[in-house]
Length: 617
Image 1 (cartoon, rainbow, N blue to C red):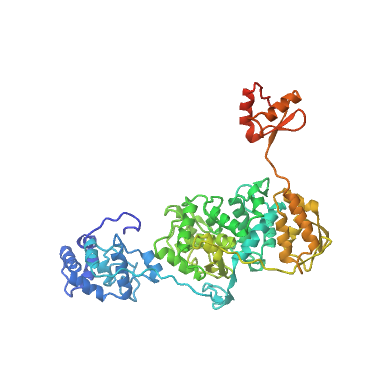
Image 2: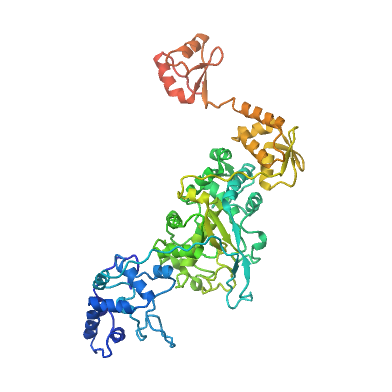
């Protein structure tokens, strides 16, 4: 059988039927005449005459059931006359019936002893229409309908879990579906993580630069709404994929490294100049940059997070950026603001022929579950695509897109969420195949539509005012209730804690933050959004004065201080027409030259007959 994607040599009906054995030809001829001939050549001739006669072909087409007619339509209008089983099942939900139903179980679906349906007359080898048959069909068979994408205005409220038959779990157990609108959370999470990094509390491993367990706990504590799952959702067995349900707290350190906002120094992440600057930029603009940077990164492959699959270090994977691009191309076809089921997204990708390859066929044998010989993923499985490409997509959508705020998500804990891996060897005790199995629906939100290029503008939602703080005229900031972890980081950054619920605004502390790239306006906005009764006039004046003073000095860049032998030489250089503005007097015998002006100054000084001093002399 010719594989999809390979060059196909177009063959006529006669050539295709000649490739079959007599045992394969006889039941096909029996569909056309009650008295089939005995010799192979005569059998081939009967079949060839039937399927190359336009009137007969039209009659045979009209006899086909609806699904087979759809298959003929798809293949007729394919440039190679190809019937793609994968694409067809994804689009229409089931395979063509090649044989009549029988109670007797034969050795395989293509067993020639079974009675074929009329579908095999059109597809003698089950995958391509003969070229001459396709030419006839093109004259009357309509083009297939475009792929229909199913969406819904709201996701269901609950989900029935899919436990295997042998499980002690209830077969009709349901759990509520959780919904998270992620854009506002992401806009708060990114600066909170950057502040945590600035506080020296984010550590990563040496080789892979992934966050440590302690770091993931610390990040979870500053996330708006926390991670997608709580510790109580995790499975108690440490060998189960649901034992570690960290998603956002794992993703953020990887995302900020990819975007160049933080880098590893020693065992901790430190903010880069871009990271410090990021604290003063609109969150949506930063998230768009993080999203764009992640699409190209090789820092980590999302599939590496499918921990249950071993042997990944030996397999030759396709380029991860190419796989992300394939997912994004299909994601852009999903209507913003409408919920899409993950299974329908998979169908859209496969049904429109825009899937991707994760590993080559040979390399799939390197991947395995628990034990390489028996648990190899090279063995055929009806749901191999879902276990490989499908899990990559789940990880990308849930851990990356949803964390950045591009997609709203509807999900349940992963235990019992899917059963598309249950036929694999050794999985009987697994509650799920990956920590991402619980993702059921997603929705492109307004931030996502903007990041995906589907709309030209994005208007962030107005910040929600809270009454978490009271700002006093004496520069005290009092917490009206225990502050969120992210709010505490801001207070510790700009103010001195004088008691468990009180912070004192300090000019020295605030200006120290400004020296590190912070802004007084960041503090002003923070206090305005969270204070009961607003910010007192005395505090506004205090902050305005600091803002004014912070803008009075500007770093002009590095410069060289040159000592002249006499005041006369210094004055001559400072007042020379070519050097004026480049050589600046700094006392009687000293001149200052900026580094950027050094080449021009050296050249002019030579013309004046002076020798530029060697460094250190």
